Length: 367
Ligand code: HEM
Image (cartoon, rainbow, N blue to C red):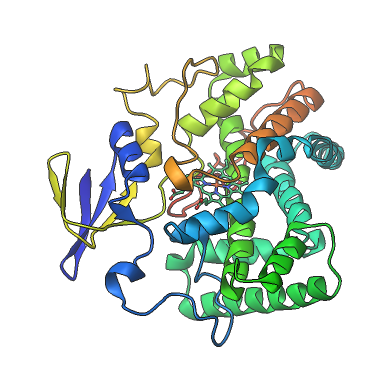
């Protein structure tokens, strides 16, 4: 664990080791809802303009977290997700058809890794796929908030809010067989979901669906290109693809850091004094390369045994979308390697560059 910075009497910490990361993520001494520490007012009043960030389940503790997670968990259970396989395969096929028209050269991120999960999450939620350029912009603005001009950020947040207000009205009048209609129904039916929680839930799912699985597909393929002997193994035996996906998750973790926690009390954390109100994050990438946990952690090995990485987090906030991301990753690689037996990285242009976004690890492009 090391201190990042001090601010107004509080220290920000990053936890690095595998065991410590797991302990942090499951400990009830670290809490998500900073209002409990720093503010006396209740969080959600549903007054004024809708607040798209106010009440994400990722930012709250039980019992609110338990209530919110229960509302969406059934839609993301492995069994429910498995039923999406034929549709995911179809989307992959359609994208590959497009790629084949590009005369042997395409961008794996823009043409494949990015659109695939977006189309899936859009259909699952019931947001029009044709609006996906807007969502990409809004989603990017939000995850890169600290690097944006404040005016641009507020403008995009307003546009996003307005878009959802109109969508919710439409689905309220004319429900469809999708998750947004279901959540609106829940909100209208009773006290299980406040208005701001509805906005926050949909925004969280859109962002999670936009910013993560693209990295899983892109990073795993990049790691395979960097390790040609591993790529050859996977090409020869597609039953190694799930192992490659798990190793991709560990080796180039798509989400670099957990979201923030706050210390709910003064404590000694493995020899370091942490004070109530201190900000603490877990370095997922670092935990996933901890030499005390993983044999030869710097090696990319699609046949790694007992690959108990923490790429999806740990504890009650463990990634809701993990079964979906794993299925999308598996299908994406199977279809890609089938369609392009001679697939390789185009090294004639500039080398692929990591996106400069805090929290996430992913490539801008992969020719
Ligand atoms: C939570 C990673 C894909 C929805 C998390 C967390 C991690 C993570 C590390 C925990 C954060 C923390 O505790 O601070 C990933 C990775 C993905 C992925 C690596 C892809 C490779 C998805 C997808 C969805 C999703 C596709 C939904 C469509 C969520 C939600 C939470 C979450 C809703 C919050 C859960 C809660 O608070 O209980 N994810 N995620 N994720 N993820 Fe994912």
